[in-house]
Image (cartoon, rainbow, N blue to C red; front, side, top):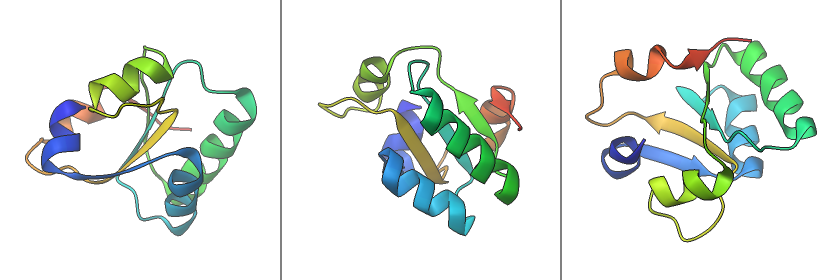
Length: 97
């Protein structure tokens, strides 16, 4: 995830990620393990409609924020461009709804 955040393009936050998911502009969605159920349901719905794979990050939102170099909690992250990271690496962790 850190390499994607540095070499690719991402959006951080539930509002921005859901908006981009509705428009089908994301390649992947990363969701923290302690995300509230209502947000998980929304993401699952929009990811299914748009055909976007969802990666469930095993750590908390604090861990996800630290991993991508943000000084705050990150519940949802949308990946717009992978940068130099091959898609095969992320696909094995992705879950389709």
